[in-house]
Length: 241
Image (cartoon, rainbow, N blue to C red; front, side, top):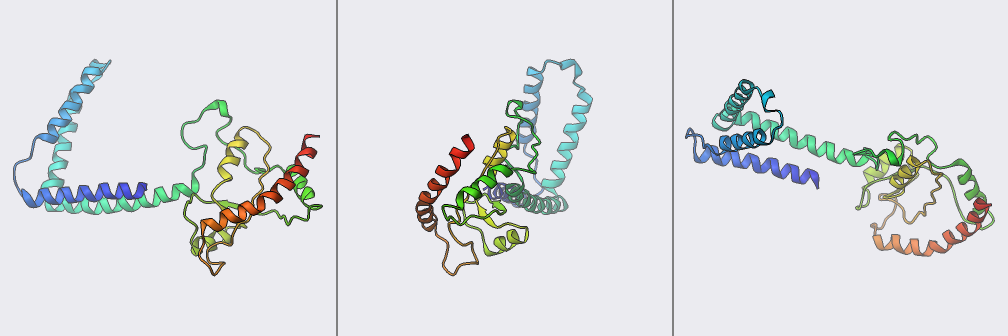
C-alpha cells in the first residue's frame, strides 16, 4: 500500500512537471510557490519564541538557492531529465524499503515506552525450554503428534508464493504463519515465560497440488480445536502445581 501511494505521488509529480513544461515553455514563473514559501516563513516568524536568533541573510540565501534550483528543474531540459531519473530511483527505493520493512520490523518499533520494559529484548530463548518440555510430555499419553521446529511469521494476508516458501525453507523455517511472533516478542519484553502451540492447517504453496484456500485453514482449525483443548487440560494443571 505504501509503495503504491508513494509511486503514484511521484508519477503525478512527473506528469505535473511535464504538463507545465509543455503548456508554458520559457514562460514567466508563477509566483504562487514563492508566495507559499513566504507565507510559511511568516507564520514561523509570528509563532517563534526566538526571533532574535533568526539569521535573515542565511534565510535569503536559502530562498534564492531554492528558487534557482526550482527554475533549473522546471524550466530547463537537463533539469527535468535529472528530476525524472531521480524520481524513478526514489520510487524503486520506496518499493524496496517498505516491502523490506514488513520482514524486518517488529512490534517494538517506533516510540519506546519504558513502562513496558527494555527496548532491546533478548530473544535467544523466546520460548521457555521448561514449558516446551512439559508440552511434549503432556502430548505423549494423548497420542498427539507434536514436534518442535522453527516458525516463520509473514505479514499476509495473502498466502506465500512457492518462491517465498523455498526461501523460508532455506532459512530454516519448518512452519509459516501470519501471527504468534509479534505477540511473543511483546510478551518477552515483559519478561513473561512463553509457550507457543501451532496447528499445521495446510501444506504451503508449491507443496500441494490444489490452490490454497482460507476456508480449508478454518476447517482444519476447527477440527483441531478439540485436540488443543485436550493438550491444555493435561498441561496447565501441571504448570500451576
